[in-house]
Amino acid sequence: MITIDELKDKLTDKARLIGLDLGTKRVGVAICDDKRKIATPLKTINYKNMSYLLGELKDIVKENRIFGIIIGYPVNMDGTYGKSAQSINDKAIIIESEINLLTVLWDERLSTSGAFNISSNLDIKFTEKKKNIDENAAAFILQGAIDFLNN
Image (cartoon, rainbow, N blue to C red; front, side, top):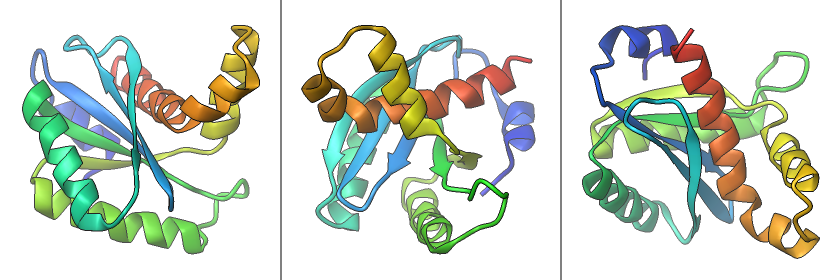
């Protein structure tokens, strides 16, 4: 894994990124445009096992010419790392080694609640918010990372 600053140094023009919100049951996936300005929710993958997830991610990477992966990292509000952070780190190592792309862990504090609140401001029904919360959280994570990369 590399840091966001290392990714910034390695980025090329038109390098697209995907953002992942790795959950135990669902994985939210978002993608950005080739100018890395806007993160867009792409899909939610039902997590069956790591092999299935890797297959889905490989397809997304191939279809969209992805340069790197931003994975939401669940840091506690006080800045410490708990069991969920270790689980995400373990999965991120596997994803990075199997997909062979630059991979960054990005602090995802408040990403799910942020995605839910944005949906609330858009007057989206609760059932739709809940249905798309994982991919919206992935977009929230990815948008934070690309905003950092653009500054």
